[in-house]
Each structure stands twice: as C-alpha cells, then as structure tokens.
Length: 382
Image (cartoon, rainbow, N blue to C red; front, side, top):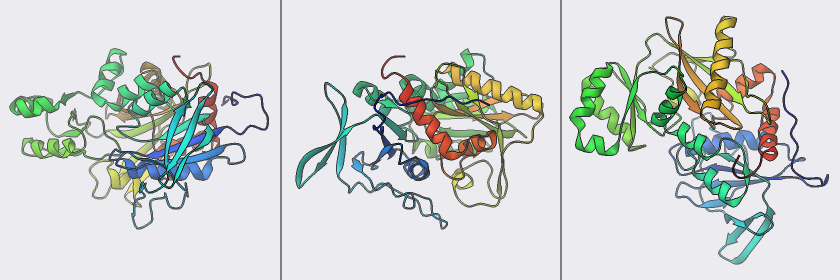
C-alpha cells in the first residue's frame, strides 16, 4: 500500500513547523481527549516539529500545558487525566502576516510564541469535534488536522449523519431523534415512536461519544430513565433499533492529497462479561472481557466490501484527514453503518491506530501522515 508524502508549506529547510496540540475541552469526553493527547505527544517527532501543548479546561479556559505524556495517561487503577486550567492563558491572534500564539499571565504583559503552522485538535465531542473549533480555525486562517466544519458538524450529530448517509444510499439501522422540545411537550408521542421501533433498543446522546449516556433499553418501562440519562449529556437524543446477533466491525479511513481515501484492515470488537455493549469501561479501562480482533476474522470479500463502504461514507460527508467508520455485520451477512467518527481515539487501546498498524502504518507514521495532510491543504474554502 502506498502512502502520500506531504511536506510543510515552506522553502526554509531550517524551519520547524509549529504544531499546536489542543486537547481537553468542555465536553463529557474531556478525559478521553487528554488520554489521546498523551499518546500523540509521546509519538510526535520533536526534531521535525516545534510542539506546543495547549489544554482546554472544562470551563473553557485555554492554557499552556506541560504536555507530559505520563500525566495524560489513564492509570492502571482507572484514574482519569484532566486539564486543571491553572497554566498561563493562551489564545490565537490573527495578524496581517500570520496567526500567532499569544500567552497571557496575570503578573506580566502578553507575549507572543510565534506563528502557528497547524493545529492538531484532539478534541472529542461537542465544542471540538462538532465543527466549532474548526470554524474558529478557519476564521483564523490556520491549517488543522481532520475534517472541516460541515463534515465535523454532520458527523457529530448522529441524527443528521443518518440523513446525509441515507441520502447517499448507505445502509443504516432504523432510528429517530427526540429533541428537547419534543420530550418536554410530547413525551407520549416519543414513547409511541419507540414502541413502533420495537424493543430492545438503544438510547444515546445525539452528539455524544465514548459511550457516555448510552443505555440499552429492554422494554418500555426503561425508556424514560434512559432518555433522561442521555439528556444529561445532550438535550437531543437518538433512539435506535437493536441489531440482534450482530458483529461490531470498525474500519479506519485516511484522506490523501489528491486521490481517493485509503482504508485500513477492519477490526472486530467482541464484548463479554457484564457488558451488554461496548461501553466506556469496555473501551478504555483494563478489561479481560473485551477482545479486539485486529484484523477481524472475515472472508476476503466481506473485508473488501467493508473497506469500500467505509471510503464511500468518508466521501459522502466530505471528510478530510481521518475517520473511523463503525459497522454492524448482521446475522444475515448484510452490513449497516452504525457511526462515523471524525476524530477517533488515539489511546493505546484505541482501534484506529491499531487497525492502521495491522495495515502497515505504525503510530508515529500515522501521526506524521495526519500532520502532513493538514500542512499540505489550503486554509479556507476547498
């Protein structure tokens, strides 16, 4: 498999592109973002890039962070990393020539760190993966890793993602969205639609991730509590049909500079023990009951179909950079797309880097590829 060779937009061989690695954020996936950043910061080539770690505290403050990978790991005991927000404040300032990083501390005047060449936004969930920071970076004229504003927003909102993918003819599980207004004003109607969908079913935040707020509902008596749990993370909720006896398959996608996207070998998640589905603990905490088969044990023709459909999904929403496409392989052999993640996790247990390693691209090469793709593309409309 061939991979793009991308170079920074500079003719100065002494110039090290400055990469601002941004992590944390205001969403419920704050800790997963920190863990992802720890892995990326440990792998990024410091001789090639000038790396500036920037943490976003859960109250929204942007601060310079030590970027210590060890501090940002999920510990063996399950202790979760966070950005505490006590560091020097940092912001982006657009000048006539470039966009600079400006550091502010209470005891001294603002100082400039210099121009930012690319931002690596390792943010999961709302206020990061949903097009918000991408829009800010577009306005600032800064290149960044990953999908643009529209693709990020559509992919983050599972209800709208299904509209776009359905229009493109992509097979999906049946579902419907419960808006905040619908739940407050027509709860009986929401219950009726759920009954029409049939039990068991899944209830999840429409714009969430890392399995926060997701419930498997076995009958009508559990629906209200499940919706309220999802609403703790997002006022908009997705209710989705249950894929009985399905295998959970994932596939990684990488953009290219000029050609079609490339796909990884698929992998399979097999969840056992007390987990009814691939929840937070099964994803991120040490667990013997969860098996990740990388690559998945699939017939060649099924693997080829999954990879082709993953690339089709990537193009359907206009993704750039990277994505992970999640599938259900149903008992009858058919495939449906479950989700599209435009900033999949990069923790040591995350599927995305493991799938690419199985395909021939190790972790440092993957990070290098993503930065190179961001540096090679134009800032602004494309």
